[in-house]
Length: 425
Image (cartoon, rainbow, N blue to C red; front, side):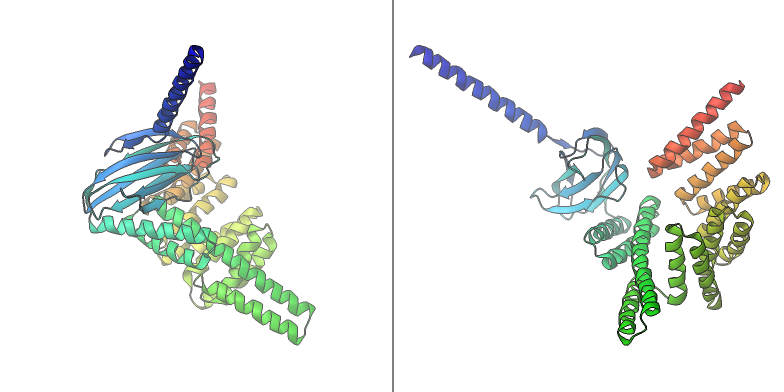
């Protein structure tokens, strides 16, 4: 009997220890850290984990949290002390880049911020998190919060396949990012609008092509009715993306779809048919875009003289409407053609001007591309020191933008540059 009692006591003791261990692990898992202003915390997050932080704020204060993702796609969720979700953020930047969540506290509270992985099955990744110093919310701060909400609504609508609503929200957010001078989120939003519109445009062109084939194959009353329905649906799709001058734009989009699918001859035909429509109605922006697109197709076909001809036609049109972004893009393209033809003086002039223009409008993606092109040019002519200077400038921008692929290519070129410099020494 005594032995049994001792055994029972041991079992109770073991159970108690296990419960303590379990509670300890649970406490570790549920640990909530206080997020203090200006202090940067670096942490490791596994898929399926949730990291929690507490943030204190007074009524009317503006809160802003910035997270840098390093190998994991993070979702941010802000809750009040009662557990109500107040704001979320998950930008379409995958496992790298920054996430910013802003909020104006209506009441004084201790808020909870939750960080989790977009993919619960993903491996571990790093992130850094920083809370900016809370301050009395200004009109600009309130505008920032509103624009972030529009951006999040656009993402939600996109995920629900509500493309028309998503485009509308992203367009409103894009205007906001321009006002706030947030180049990073402006570019992310611009990409989303482009992809959504291209998807709608491709649908419309498919319907138009199906209609044309139907007419060619069966010239009956029924086939004409079917064609009418297809064209009507295509028109509705194009209207959802603010189409004017539809004949020209349908032709242009047919060129774009053909180019993206690798059919360069068809792309040239469609672009060339669209061009006079834009010119007749004095639609300068689309005239310039079409001329640049024709030049781009000829460049892909290695017909450099024809590419230059159209690029040089696009350039004055962009200048006439003061479109610095378009002008810089064309100059970058012209620089590339001159570079391939070993016209270094002309290539250099085009690239330098492109860098200047991109900087003047704070377009970091374009600036990084032009700087990288300058690095390649100087590397090609044997000026390795100058090449490294431009590659390093491009690398800095690519890191800011979270462009890992661009970083990798530039780092490779930097490595080759240093290797060749050492060989000379």
